[in-house]
Length: 472
Image (cartoon, rainbow, N blue to C red):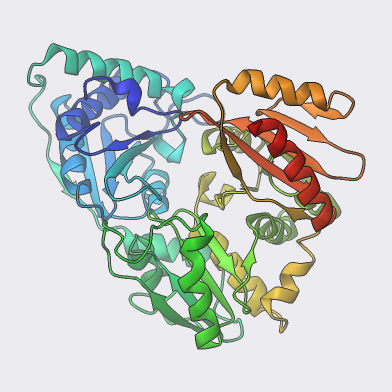
């Protein structure tokens, strides 16, 4: 439990509770975070001109519905306050609600969640004021080192007297902000099945899309698993796994719904199925939202990661935008968005980023764009999505390998005559438009393969060819 390198990952803190971390570790991480903020180092927020923004003496904290989250969040808060800083406790929230809090209040923040991981996991996503990301290269490594030093001393935290905690309910303001970005009041009536997976979507959807607080929209929401339960009694809150979409697909058909939405555990990602119960790829959603944003902001840059469909940059260019390819991972995309002032960004994993949302990711806002696009015309979603799905993709396939670097080199040698790049792992592009990306996991002895082809037969043949190379 004392080795923080096991839980401090590339973008966040993540591990099992109490085996890998507990409230004492959370307290040390809170103190380390506060020390870094007070020292005025890289974790502090900066505006585009390099000047400091936000209050360096206050941190906003939120947590999800996991059994361990309230205690871990409270311990982190105690660590922050032991360094003489104040805390705003936003209580229960989705990750994008925490980003809203950090952005609207211009404060650094910490969200306690393990996203789509099973119940025994928990984690922390930390950000600068203005929802600016914190990763290994932008402060997280230093937080780990400072917290490790605190734990190695084995002594109670000492410092300035604890500051008070201010309770602040931001759910209504968060919902009103999103409603102000996408107007759904004039769309045709839609029936929408929403699978919250017992995660935070069950907390946010009734307020953002329902009539619990704000005026009603022309939406009939059919709820699935809205009860908050960090033990995930119905299925894991990981819609990237097709097995976790089965209930949503069945409910869409049963209720004759126009579409289905599935949120992950912390509700920052949103997956979509059409009226037939068929999944709509995140690449198609990325292209659809990009077209809408480019209509409002002509000529803007749109970010996509390197394993989204080739249709995405094609459609961005066709609509007058400037596509920019980024590495996989939210800290890379957010950094590229801030650097280029991009209007929007999308990933294959259903993370969607918006300039109007402090360059942060929010699955809810992407869902609202989709509802608006569908509700502003009469075609079913399956027909609307067709023009954004030009190619056939494999989805991500994991293979266990003993030596990731050696296997990547072997595959590169096999395809040495094709166009390659190594922005993130190995990407190989072929003259007929097919491509592969093979990249190593940061945390496991895995290689992750994504393949796309102009036809299903071409994709399958290429997929099987590469998997044979990787696994033999």
